[in-house]
Image 1: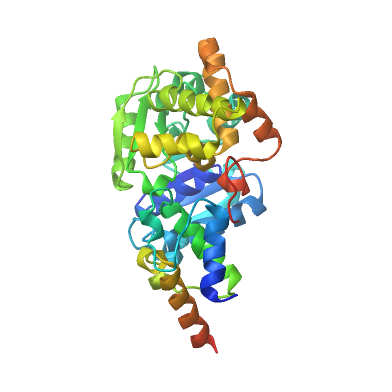
Image 2 (image 1 turned 180 degrees about the vertical axis):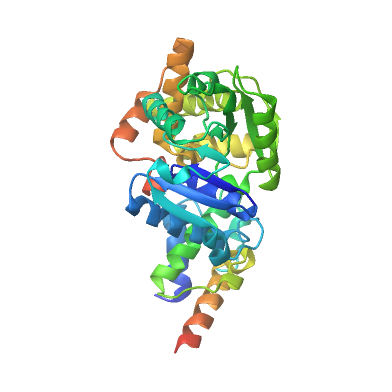
Length: 281
Length: 80
């Protein structure tokens, strides 16, 4: 099996690393500090334990973790055949990481950008090999979500796409082909919905519980938009809405001030213990 | 407080609208999904200082306060 690099050990990177390891590959998971990586290993262990209860396969946490090595810095990715980048949804951070990846990776390494909103062609423009860059929008929690959006950039080659599809198939993922446009399909719709739901709370029209109850009770959605915001991360929602706003220069994507305040206050959702709801840590 | 009371208190603290008995299937209420099961596992392990064996991590063990109580009490008596 191939060696797959995973950049960023946040919520998405942890889920991607687990799914890739479950697919039988060796994983090199990198981030900026040993502390983050130790937390990531603990989270992967915990998520593997819970897998069956969450409706997934029965996983042996020790077996999965044995396939995951961790390292500080991108140099550890030199032997990876394919690298999946999952850093914060912020253009400056993405730009810096992709410039660094361009320096440290051999020319034939496929670079997958996991993004929910940033155009792939723009990410690919950072490096000298835009043909090997492709977008995959993984859903959260990654191990539990069977479908992703697959987005080729302007210069992405068929070979890059094929190698990415092979990896996705080995992870048990199916993909929906989507053309490159900020937010793709999912977040053009979802982020506006969550942003508008936040406005309803911000304006006092309804509580978070009431907004979510309308979506569950009236529309039959398994989760309401604000529960979903807490799951994705309120900060990530804000960054995604900001990316849409900046990219389309259209005021319909103006971010709700409540999302900004919650992000500044550290109310980032499940991962911080509090967002629109409060959680047991 | 009994084991059951502590578990019910945790659930109603998170879902104040829940009026549940110890035999009610919390996942059939419509607003509690399996993500909360993960929180329940973490709460129970911390609250009762036990580690639930991996093969007991089944959704059926967490559907009702009664089922959770049996799981907790069984594990605690096994330790003693």
